[in-house]
Amino acid sequence: MKTKRGISDMGALQSKPARWCIGRSVLTLSLIILLALVNTAQAGFEEGEKAYRNGNFAAALKEWIPLAKKGNDKAEYYLGRMYQNGQGVEMDSTKAAKWYNSAATKGNVHAQYELGMIFHRMAMTEFDYQNALKFITKAAIRGHLKALYTLGKMYRDGYGVEVDPVRAYVMFGFARKRLKEARAAFKQLEERMSNQEVALAKKLGKRVFDPSVKTSVEGSSIGPKGICSLAKNNLVNASISLSIAAQDLEDCLGEQWAGELCQREQEMIEKAYENIRITSKVMNSSC
Image 1 (cartoon, rainbow, N blue to C red):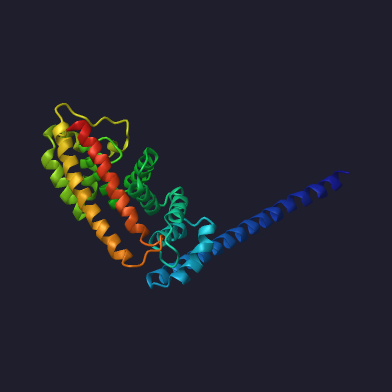
Image 2 (image 1 turned 90 degrees about the vertical axis):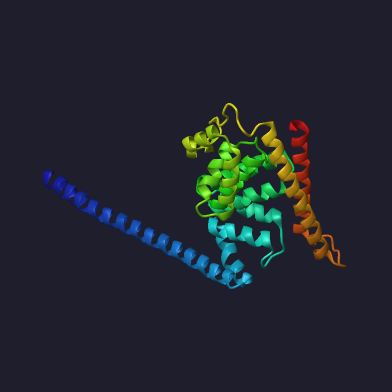
C-alpha cells in the first residue's frame, strides 16, 4: 500500500511541471496574439495617417473607422477632425464632438482641446461655458500650448469665468516660450498688473489649476476700471470679428443659397454676436 501511494505521489509531482509548462505556453501564446493585434492596429493607423497627410481622405477613413469603433483614441481624434473640417465627409460639428468626446475621455490631449474649443466657439449657455473650461483646462494641465493660451484669454477677458489676471498670467507664462501670441499677451497683461499680482502669480505657478486656490489680492489693478478696459477691447475685437464673419458669409453664399451651406460662417457670426452680448452685459454691470 505504501508503494502504491508513493507511485501515486510521484505521478502528481510529475504532473505539476507539466501543467506549469502548459500554462506558460498558453500565456506566451496569448501575449504573442495580443502583440500581433496591437502591431496590426498600429500599422492600420499609420497607413491612415499617411493617406491623410497625402490628402487621400477616403483611404484614411477606411483605415481609421474600424479602429475608432474599437476604441482607438488616435483614430477617434482624427475622425473628429475630419468631420469638423469636412475632409472626406460632410462637415458635421455634432459628429466631430462625438468622436472628440470619445477620445477625450480616454485622455487624448488633442481631443480634449478640440472638444473644449467646440464648446468655446459655440457657447450659448452656462453648460457650454463649463464644458469649454473643463476640457480646455484638462488639455492645459498636460501642457497643450494652445489650450494654455486660450485658457489665459478666458481668464483675462472673463469669457465664461470671472476675470482673473493672476491665472491668466500663469497660463500665458507657461505657453510664451513656444507660442508667439502667448508672449505678446503675457507682456501686455504684465504691464497692467500690480506688483503684488505678479508676485502672487509667480508664487502659485501650477497651483492655479486648482479652482479652490485664491488668486485675488488687495488693491488689485484689475478692478472696475481694469474690467471696463478689458471689456472695451473685447467689444472692439468682437465687432471686428462680426464684420469679417459677415463678409465671409457674403463671399460664401454668392448667388447660391442652399440652407446647409456656409455653416462655419454662420457659426462665426453667432459667436461674434454672443461675444458682443456678453461684453455688453459686463460693461452695463461694471462700467
